Image 1 (cartoon, helix red, strand yellow):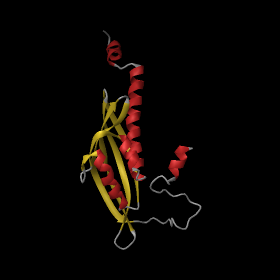
Image 2: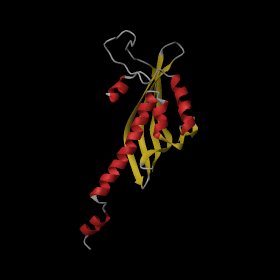
Image 3: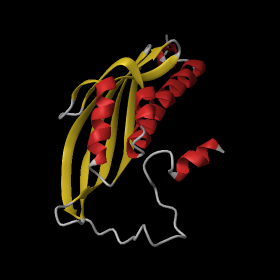
Image 4: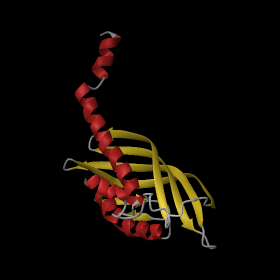
Length: 183
């Protein structure tokens, strides 16, 4: 057997590669939808992304995903705004299970004691286990690994109460993105 034949024998077919790509995209969409759900404080959407028996480990929270949702919604109430940026995403498929590592930078506007906001950034990676059950991918476990953080006084210059021509993000279904996706 020539080296070209050996390479072709070991290489997955085009159909398999396309199938794998679609599975990886489904898992990637879960990661991106989770960032959106957290930033919009949409607990219902967060619940939809986890399997019913899923678990979560965010360091300060370890337990069921079902109990993570009210916990994280309560934590988010103490912040004025958040924005999670997801970067590098690597997905490894093993049949109906997939393992993901997704880099994140999470921005938080946190009230300071003097009435202003502090701007806190946390950066790290999500280590997710996805499972396909009944043909649908969802998260079975999410773990957060923290790499660095920083905090400083906010320099946000927008007066959200006196800029009627601007569209600002808000938490919940009043955010412009909900109407955008519903149209």
